[in-house]
Image 1 (tube, rainbow, N blue to C red):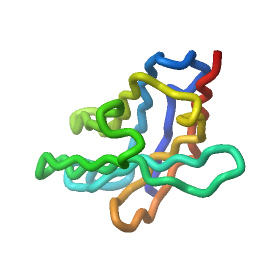
Image 2: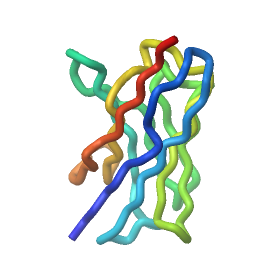
Image 3: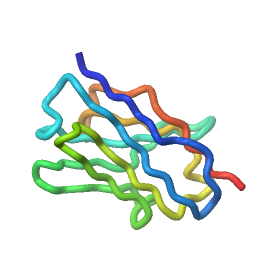
Length: 116
C-alpha cells in the first residue's frame, strides 16, 4: 500500500523558513518522480515542484523558483521541500505526490500559514 505522510507545516512570519517532509512507503522511492503541490484557501491546486532524483533533475514553478528547494533522502524514503523567504501568498495546504506530470498517489497535506 502506497503511503505518503507530510509533516513540518505551521505558522511562520513573512520572510521566514520552513522545511516540509514527506515520508513515503509502499513503492520504490529511489526510482520515482515526486512532487509538491499546494492549494491556497479558496483556490485550486497549484504545482510547486518536482524531482527526478534518479537523474538529479528538479523543476520549480516560477512563483517559488529561487526560494524553495526540493530534495530527497533515498535512505530514509523521504521527500523534502525547503521553503525560504516565505510570503503571505505561500499560505496553503502542501501535498506530497507520487509522480510528476501525472500524480497517482497523494498525501493528506500539511498546512503552511505565512502571517505576521
